[in-house]
Image 1 (cartoon, helix red, strand yellow):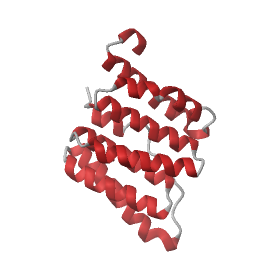
Image 2 (spheres, rainbow, N blue to C red; image 1 turned 180 degrees about the horizontal axis):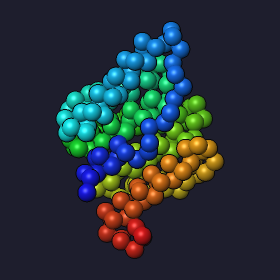
Image 3 (tube, rainbow, N blue to C red; image 1 turned 180 degrees about the vertical axis):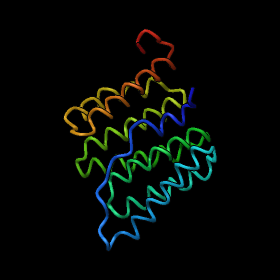
Image 4 (cartoon, rainbow, N blue to C red; image 1 turned 90 degrees about the vertical axis):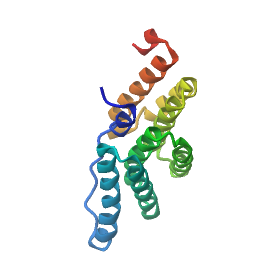
Length: 173
């Protein structure tokens, strides 16, 4: 059985991205390095390093406008936050990126942030808050293209976890 914080980091596979241009190769390498360091620290159980490196990666990806990078770097940030019971920073960052994705009309990325928000709610023992997000997430997931299947699976996982936490095993099935 995997710890819940590790499940959060594995909600979706890492998306394939286009190779960076030569002019941005160095910046992309630095961002990727922070993200990879966060993942490695998370897997080895070094949560403080995972949290720091994931936060660094999110900021770097955001400053470069790399939405895929922002989204993927949030997973280890949320997972490490849950593992260390330091969810306030993660909740703030999720809200910040959710607003960014709304402003840029990126529905699949909005759904991803709301799923992470739901995971944080479950970590804080508030399954009702997580379940309240389901209909909004479903609306964003529908028609989200290549990400639809992965987001649907992550949403189902969130619903199962929230219902089990709530003590409603029949709804979890």
